[in-house]
Structures are given as C-alpha cells and as structure tokens.
Length: 416
Image (cartoon, rainbow, N blue to C red):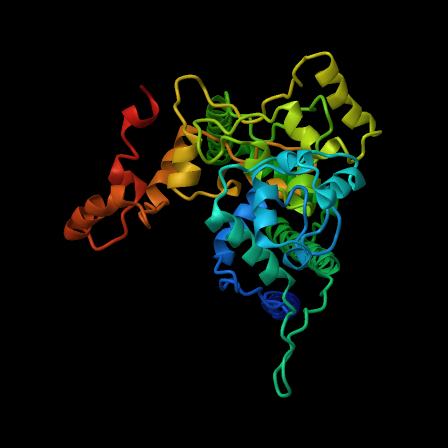
C-alpha cells in the first residue's frame, strides 16, 4: 500500500517537472527585433554619422529631435533643405549673434519658441557640425522594407509567466503535503509495530510520544544547540559586515526629479546634467541653470519646477541629497572608469533610466570593487598609453589583461 502511494507521488512530481521544463524552454526563446538599425555611414556632406550620434545625444537631444517633433526647439528633420550649411554652422556656433544681426529667419524662430536661448557651441568646427547633420539625415532616412521571400520577425506573445509560477508553487505545496501525509502514515505503522498489535495509539498520542523520544536524545539536543550557535554567529558577522553599507538607500529629494522620465523616456545623456562624469573625478551635481535650459519653456507652472525658480530667485542652491557615498579614506575617479575604462554607468549605479527615485543598487564595498578589478579587462583600444604595457603582458600571459594586472589590487591605488 505504502509502496504504491510513493510511486504515485514520484510519478506526479515527474510530470510536474517535465511540464515546468517545457514552459521554461518556451519562455527562454529569444525574441527577435523587427526594427532595422539606422545606417551609420557618412552622409553626402562627408560627416561621420556615428560620431554625430554621440555629439547629438550629448548636446542636442535635450532640446531637439531628429524627426519633425518639437521638444523644446524645432525638430531637425529636413534642416539642410531649409537652411544652407554656412547659416547652420553660424547658428550652432553663436545663435544670439545671428539673431542680433537682424536675420529674419533667426528672429522668427526665436520669437516662435518663446525667446528660448539656444546654447552656443563655439568649439564645434566643420567636422562636428557635419557629423551631426549626417546623423540627423541618417536617422530620418526611410527604413528599407523586406522584399518578397524575406521573413519578417514578430514579437513573441506573452506567455503569462506570473500565472504559471503561481500554478507551480501550488503544485509544489500539494506534493509536499502528500509527502507529509505519507511520512505520518509510516510513523503510525512503526508505532503500532513497536507497541504491539493490541495497543493502538491515536495520532496525537503518537506525535507526542515521538516528540518526547526526539527531545530525550542527547545527540539531537547537541545538534540543535550547535545549529543555534552557528546561526547566531553567522548573523552577528553578517551584521558587522553590513555596517556602513547603504545598499537600497533611496532618500527623498527636495525636488521630485524622475530619472525614469529624463534618462529613460527622454533619452537625455547622463553627461548633460552630470557634466563631470566623463572628464572629472566626480560626476557633479547639476546646477539650477542646467535645469532651466529646458524648463524655462517646459512645464513652467508645475509645483516642482517652481522650486527651481525659487532657488534661482533667492540665490540658494538646490540641496540635493547624495545617494552614493564612499568613505573619505577611499579614492575614486569617475573619468578613469567611464572615459578611460569605458565602464557604463549601470555597472555601478544599476538601471538608472528605469528609476523613478534613485537608489543605491550596489554595495560599493571594498570587496565589490576588488572583485570588479579581478574580472574587468583593461580597455586599451585607441589608447597609446597601454600599448607597450599590453605588449609586455602578452609576452608573459596568453589571457586578456585585467585591471588587477595593472595594479588594480594595490592598496595605494584607492587608499593614499
């Protein structure tokens, strides 16, 4: 009887496991992207569209779109058809000078968009301007439609993973309950055999007798005590290691700024607000005038935006609360990691573009940093500083050069 019962449970568990594996395999099938990538080849003007994309996203995307859509200023689609190259370059280098010269088109544009002053990019030469124009033109180019016989990939339908997981959990609970019933049945049979055929104990009496037997066993008591001591010791050490670690810290800011909206939906590059992220020791906290580049025209009546106006009128800085803190004894340079090392922001800060309220996602502990230095390869591409160093490394090792091979584990690198 008991053997048949166990066989039934085993067969049920096997069927559940096979079903679970099949659904997981279906969910793991990669979804293909139906959108075609925009060509990055230089446009007719000779500009580098790939370079133009970087320049546009870092300097222009906050106020302009490559389409006809109006953001803060007009969309740039068809810009070269409306104005010649000489005019466009003058406008980019010094827009207010073009307006002051009495240019009718420039003044009409200035008045149409609420006299919003465009930032002057005086350092942009022909290469930069042509690159941006090439990117705008490439972005506006029509996407080629697939010819006959070409398969068009469609997005995979949702599989309802949440509902399926609930079913799996309920199934596992049922299996556990059946196993528990089987074990109780075995205990009852063993009790009956040990107490004789004439003596029958109830379930409660059997359970009580079994508990007393286990409690009276010295080996069991010793094991329980040592288990408690080990768990208490581990909890104490975990608590001590957590001192100074603020993972999950998400303070309330004086202004409800949404990174999900600005960095996610609006695609504003991090360097636009945090100006030092690629060239300074610190990324920097944006000043109010950076906010006003857009918000002197956008959502001016919003209560949160009015806090920016108040800060400017009273000449008091916005008291942003710092989220990511390192101890004073540790040295960290943003530019060394983001610019030289090519590390993306999300490696340390998580997916900022999805955060409504920014929080510390990583531990930022010494062990976390060292582990990264052990795994990360040195980015020596187009960097002559590392050329001879990487050549020397290749003579003694066949593997890629890691940060630890370049002194990344030396104490003086971070503590001085």
